[in-house]
Image (cartoon, rainbow, N blue to C red; front, side, top):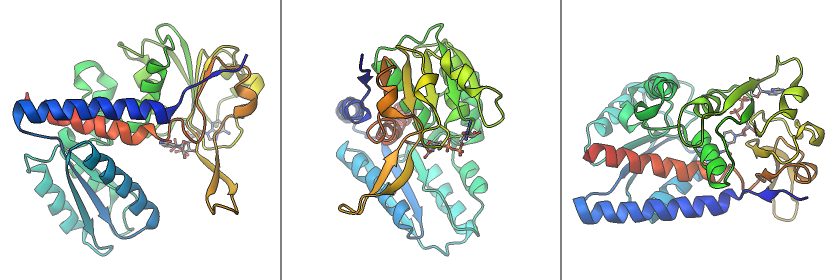
Length: 296
Ligand code: NAD
């Protein structure tokens, strides 16, 4: 039987429509809208394209959006002063500093300067701690893990008591999604195992996963025979495996052998069109939450 495809493109559309509706209601009730500032330092083409997409999405939802571009040679001190300005701006609910930053600027110093209540990327140590504590404390979840959890919930996958195996232990995907799935709450209450490069028998762990979340960055790492029949497979990997000479665009592949895996899994995310499109939607949702929180 062929697996049901969990489309990130479709779920993103639904989430953005929900966010837009809540923004309209906020405007009507309180005369306010969520405010997001995107700070771009320098002119890396990849960063420009990420920021442009975030800005366009925010504007399409009716957010108050400021795109604050800064020159490559901005000093660390000036960048910190800029963050401080937005920390104190009541119309701004989300501050996003596009990474990577130039070498003369310390990323960590910048990220901890953001007010945790405006840290919509949820990379600040305070938000990492809140995520560990769970419940009401965790205002924001980091966007990629939040997108993964949303896909699991909206695909109708049962998580309570499920065996979840997470491949990868990075700070931006593996560790936070593992913690989120183990918490009490909707889309959670799972029994979680994290596997990584030092794990002895990767295949054995994957084989017992009711929900397999793969974020390793290794194309084809997960073999079809590692997949439990009927399970839900979330492939976070985005790997460039070649170039389409006609379109000039990169050919992308995930960490799972999709064509073979879809004949075994019950539900599976594709690459592209799976987890990728979810991240920006969750960023918008975090900014909305921050604005709602500020109104309380
Ligand atoms: P990372 O390199 O920081 O971490 C990868 C993790 O996978 C490490 O913890 C490592 O131990 C583990 N790993 C690597 N090779 C392994 C192997 N052979 N066996 C077992 N474990 C192995 O990467 P990351 O930032 O977590 O990203 C992982 C993948 O997800 C990448 O392909 C990245 O492009 C993708 N990604 C996608 C999105 C998105 O779609 N929005 C967001 C973030 C990351």
